[in-house]
Image (cartoon, rainbow, N blue to C red):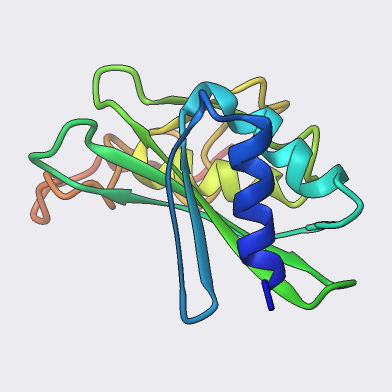
Length: 162
């Protein structure tokens, strides 16, 4: 019997064969690797296909593969409350153009998650309604979860606001 995660991968492959670069589904771990330009359509299919119904974006994060090209990977985790299944979507992003379409218009929960990834990795989300730092102060230089961020880096001192 096919689980919903595997069914989601099959639907994505049927609907967007040009954008899905690979999939795997082992031990209940269903993952699709997609082109970043296709993210809005992939998310729309996962959310709006009645047989899938992945109505909840539970996590959005990034991974820094320093030394690889493309360097960054943005990772989305979805959950279907109705079907009690999960699926993961991954897309790679180059260091010289770290931009991914925003998911906020499809999943409101992406708002702060995208801001966190922007703040800590420097990956921008095109179309985000308010993309600004969420954890660090505005004068903070760099993105501390990048693997090449110097751990001894001194940051500018910021005085109390008047």
